[in-house]
Length: 236
Image 1 (cartoon, rainbow, N blue to C red):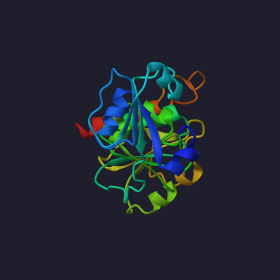
Image 2 (image 1 turned 30 degrees about the horizontal axis):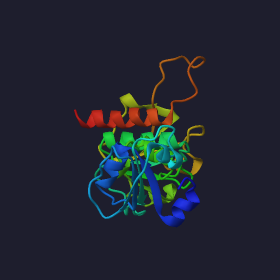
Image 3 (image 1 turned 120 degrees about the vertical axis):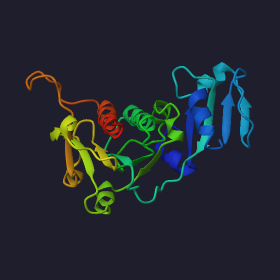
């Protein structure tokens, strides 16, 4: 299940470790569990194989396997219409699996239940993504879609936020309790077609001068700062 083509053909993905597998089992029934004798799963309708630590290492995607590996069916793909009464997140070309997994975990922490991804965003079922979510994949819905089309179908005046260097200081801007927050590619930011559709351009200010500051923030860090500021305002 390491290759995307095989995952899509079988409609299955792999999760590892007691935390990730345990959280997923609350919402999905696994097809298969491989685990060592030291881990006891909840009863369920799935195939269960007890293996040695050495056997688990041979099939694990992790450098240090964690007692259990589960094979799960993929979630449903469609999320339906974007909810207009809450904050949602869109990822435009986020390609690093670790970043995507961390962003899913951030969304879970801040109570964002939906993430809409461009087709060139990393595969949510990549084992590195699944592990980086630390179980948050069980609570955050992720789908892949045409983001410009998604924005075009929103009601007129619905706020679409995006972080970019030409934006206005996020700490001085009005932020609504509902809207779509767009985060862009690690190197190139938000793509041109989607950039044209951003209604509120936001900047996370840097404390360094122009000649000494870094080129950009890590996209997962930027997501945490951005969503955290939205939630801080909502809590006032």
